Length: 274
Ligand SMILES: [Zn+2]
Ligand SMILES: [Zn+2]
Image (cartoon, rainbow, N blue to C red; front, side, top):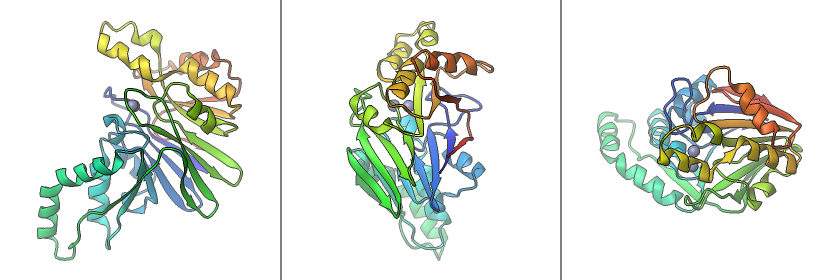
């Protein structure tokens, strides 16, 4: 299995970090997890066009994880020679979000159908909503969902990709919780979005301080990784955007959570293969 951290940014714009998105390539499938800012640029860098995506999974409907959903839908539709509906799996609310997006694109859909004689179908999105259990299965590749805790954003889910005895977990935004423990148990790779409360507290903005309420700190990610006896912990979606050369601080904080396995500080297009 090959994991590519497509976008490691957060809502805070950063010149070198696209929005939240991860690609897992396994058994000939291209599985995309979340589709934040700039996802198609990073997918192109990974050699994958939107028409090739096997399945899109959404962890939750926060804007930084879905803001380029419209770009995935439109570009897949406009570039595919035949009808190629986008399969989407996400928590309850995903179907309504997808339909609202199609509605937002109504004018553009009309322009393109009017212009191209060979494009005479609407963009298609096929949504399945999940909370818990097997979310997707094909051959010997399986994706399991479990509820996470990112309240007041709810419901939210994390995903566990299994293939040939190997496991990658995409936790999404969450504080430590039972569902997260269930997902990460014995995983080879655990990808966690993280915040640095020590840095966030230095910014004189109550709204920014709220960010710490519903994300895992590096230390908490380390503790979750240790409890689950995972092989590798990947730190992504770093808040605030990390200063160049500060990787070691983030890793040391995660280490302080009691985890003694490998820790990867993710940048855009970091690859982890297992
Ligand atoms: Zn979120
Ligand atoms: Zn987020």
